[in-house]
Image (cartoon, rainbow, N blue to C red; front, side, top):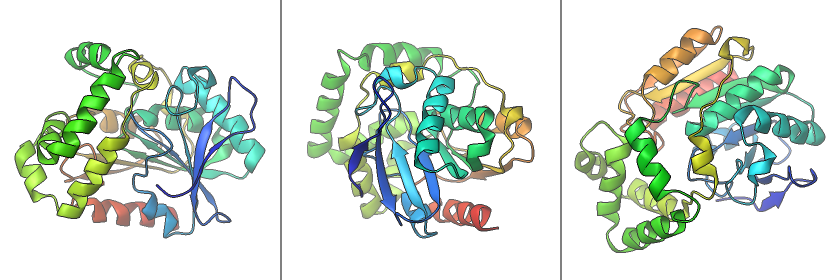
Length: 282
């Protein structure tokens, strides 16, 4: 993680925890993280740093120090973010939605089009039903606010003792490919980076909130849009990006060969990096 965690000046209960990184006087990118994450987590920010962007990474409601009251639904949090962004700088910015953060990114582009210059959706959840019923039931048990600390403490301890085992277990939910092969093919540096990511994961009250249905109208998105998704993603089915691509006017789509939902931990990420760079510079 680079940059210090801050709290926005917006009065409680809408206060947002966020982190700034990159060139702090450059144009802005807002990165909306996925489930079990917070402003502390850096996923793919180097792509934007090299282009001279200031990266703003907020903790979504229920994660980190951002309360659920800051926006219990993607539409409500989009309004809170709009107030925050307008107070910082009213110029349009790039908005990136990762995984469960995709719905908030969509809502921001739909409701406040004047604030969004470009929209990038990476492994993003759309408005289709998500997740599968069996996954939802398991999540309600393992990641409810009272149990999730025990769940993650056990996972963090296991990651210290048996990192390879933890990565293979994760890949059961993240990839359609054989988990052992995915991990074995991953360079040691990426394996270590993924273990470090695992050590930072917490669900707080945010993850169960992410599981609630959300509605929106992607056809209202006016910003140029790039949708990036792995065909091997076992967490967010491929019909999410394909449905969004059909609904968002003039959306571009990259269906990647990345090994899992976490596209950054794959030798194929360089292709994604190039695609995002071309999208933002052209």
